[in-house]
Amino acid sequence: MKNCEYQQIDPRALSVLPSSAQNHTEKKAQRPRRKWEVFPGKNRFFCDGRIILARQNGVLPLTLSLIIVTCGLFFAFDCPFLVKHLTVFIPVIGGVLFVFVVLSLLRTSFTDPGILPRATPDEAADVEKQIDTSGSSTYRPPPRTKEILINQQVVKLKYCFTCKTFRPPRTSHCSLCDNCVERFDHHCPWVGNCVGKRNYRFFYSFIISLSFLTSFIFGCVITHITLRTQAGKTIVQAIQESPASVVELVVCFFSIWSILGLSGFHTYLVASNLTTNEDIKGSWSSKRGAEDSGNPYTYNSIITNCCATLCGPMPPSLIDRRGFLPHDEAIPAVSASEIELPPFTAKNDAHMEENCQDISLSCTA
Amino acid sequence: MQGLVPAATDGNMATEFHNLQELRHSASLANKVFIQRDYSEGTTCRFQTKFPSELESRIERTLFEDTVKTLNNYYAEAEKIGGQSYLEGCLACATAYLIFLCMETRYEKVLKKIAKYIQEQNEKIYAPRGLLITDPIERGMRVIEISIYEDRGSSGSSSGSSSVSGSTAR
Image (cartoon, rainbow over all chains, first blue to last red):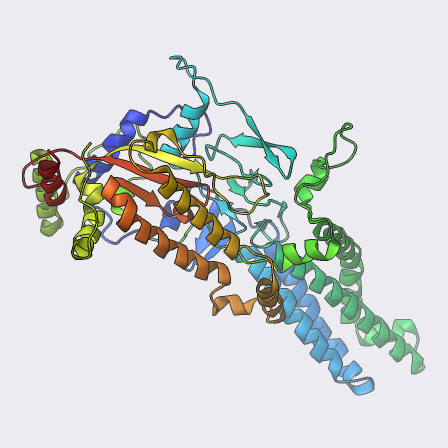
């Protein structure tokens, strides 16, 4: 599966595979293996497949530590002063926002973004068969695109050579994770995961709540320093009394620009039912030719677009990380052309008996 | 043409289910047909209802189309954007999405219904004709995979069900 070169699949070898695999099932692994252990993409799994992460975390630890440290300093140094002089709701609101931000961030990072499992060999062979109708002995790779009509508009579907299937519309292959992701938005290094169909709403909640949190902390810190200077001290004295506030100010000041900008951009994307990928490539922009090339996925109403993107039904994960590998797929890494017979292990007599029985059955068939 | 088992009666249901499990072991896989997705209405899950030519001799067109149309209806119900899905979405957002850890989403409920429906269709209609539908969720919702099995013909004691039907068919 790591081989990126195109290989033609021999359908004749496929029908041999199930029966021989039954005879010589992998007996070395005493326990049944879960599907995440043989997952072909570049992902990492924790908690026995419950948590999925991209292989390169990017700067997720940095994001988490920035948020936790800044909030920690806020609660430790600014809140006591503000509670005394203003209201007790300040740390309450701050706490709620902080919890929401961290939960959204973790949810975005650890959720499967909508990864499409790769095509089974049978499926890939079928796709090839449908395209290569000339029947020539020298094969050529399938054409790269297929055109379909979506809402009376022509959309090109591209063929993915890694996943060996035509990508559904709005799906894109992430090279960092080596997976096709549905409704691919972008690969976010801050979050350490792709943002796609299944975790876009978590990502959106994360950036919106983070904008509120940074603005809130920024406002509170400014208020704090202002209140101190109003009590008759200079700004320098106020800062000396509460140095942590400067750290928070700096962090918030630089984050606010980028986070608010990102929130605004994504609000625009949500309202027009676009993805970052489509927007950057200009797939549906009106610059392209005279033909009507509007976005075929939009509902032409801002509210409906927002509701569909953020409050739509939660699609299931397609990769079934925790499912067990069935017996006849116990050797997934073996290519179709070479089927090796693993030697019988003398470890378990019961299994050997089973093997012998299987062989006798198939011989009499 | 050899079918695997005679048409289902009540008494045969248990045997038939048993036969379904043995289907993959007793009969040999001849071919697989893939029903692709239909994207004409957008990215919602729909499958093409075009009748594949490989199935022409195996099953009636109407039965096949009914199955696919029912599946399409189930998927449309799962992905419907309406009052209930908004409620679910807003409630989830209000609880910081923690509610997904304990509650089963509407989509998952419909997927269970689909799995039951497919199993029922396999038992009643497809297995007697030597066919087997694989649930699309196992193929990443890209295709409906229909496996076409050929009976191995009369053979010793290896596969009870197929040999019985093989002899009766002759």
